[in-house]
Length: 306
Image 1 (spheres, helix red, strand yellow):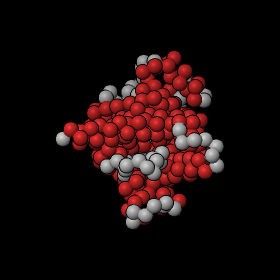
Image 2 (cartoon, one colour):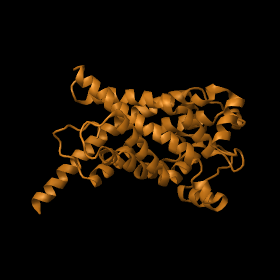
Image 3 (cartoon, rainbow, N blue to C red):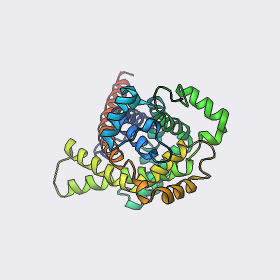
């Protein structure tokens, strides 16, 4: 796994999956306001602004939300977001090593192509069953907490029930194709770029294998990932948030955006996306290594006692 020293004893699959899920939840709690701001910027322009509220930039969006809806609005959908990370990150990150070893037959030093294939595989696997949590998270982040404005959902469980009752299973898995595309891109770009940047830094002895190296590698991976995945991310957000009948398909959603708002619409919310992915990567990778090591120490102590 990225950030793992060759001398380290490879942790078992359960430890890697649990560590990845916990670390991703920590990262989500730290960066969730940026994610909410990103969603608000991405859906802006698809319908008439409520109460003439317009968002301008990531920090302008955050300040506007605090002023008009209160600070709690920045964490709309956090419960669904944490549910998503427990299901999603534990698979896409926790299974990465195992899938990579499966493709290489256990050989060391896998090629970039194998790493990309492993990242795409675990990213797609994670979305296939964690999609409902993402749909609910996006819809909560999109709804506004304003007086006189009807709210679509009152709680996380009510949102799951409402979507199932009115849109069926297809509603809960709405936007699966663009989300699989987006997360396959994010996962392989994030993990592979982190690996390559870190290896280049260590090879040229620019930094030692410590926190500054991890910081630079994670932030660089976040930027590259945002550039590649942003267009798919915007389409995914709009399509999952749309009411039944607004778009015929994800492709129709993308075409509507292109014809009505132009190509720049695909990069709406780029700055918060970048800030969120960069900071999310840093918090997640650092937390992941620490939690994983703590779990391995605890496991070894239990084995010694027994």
